[in-house]
Length: 321
Image (cartoon, rainbow, N blue to C red):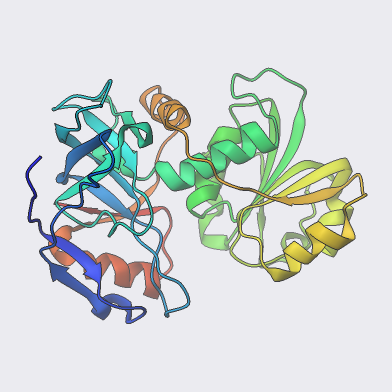
């Protein structure tokens, strides 16, 4: 595979906000030690702006992409040139705001015609997180079988929460969700049985309007919620699955509830191609959808960044040609 120069948009250093993004023409990395790479034309697709370099506190890259394969490595088993795929890129490789990307075959899923590039590019990180939290950590079966469970999803209008509400309702569950006032109707439309406005006293206290105790909580809100708020709302063996654990949450994991029937646990994401296949299939079948906030061309990627940083958005911000 010959080296390629490509149009890309990247941060040159930590921080800087939208103005820190610069157009560059790097060479695509092929990683000579590996032979199972698929090279796909991301410029015929889209990338989702979801993980950002904000203020220098961490370095983030765009890792969710969808595109068409234009080259394959010598050991690729299934993928072929022309396949349309959804993929998750490894961190530290420059991100997905570029014409081309190199990704392992094990990190891709075929994208059928029924699933647009924009829909597909929103799935990987947020969708996989929601899927793993519900099916692996909470043990919910998406075919509707299994014992009935009461589930609370905090931050239901966020990237993970929007998928989590939809996926949870595929199981035998009653879903209570929290979000801001302006997104209540959206979250209801995705299937939530009850929606709490987190700006109200009941919302802040996570109290179910039907006085239910939660068997599982998918905590995807960006703000930390004290264990003292969760605990009285849990069933006898209620489990809080914390997707964004902070220092106080980690303290709770270790010291407060190690021997308690009610527990709070962090979720370690393990991106699997078969799980990505599952998500794509659900979108194809109309059982799951990507909520899209806005779309921006690659040449205006800084506008997507600015929108994500400076305004309230709901759903995925997509960068595409």
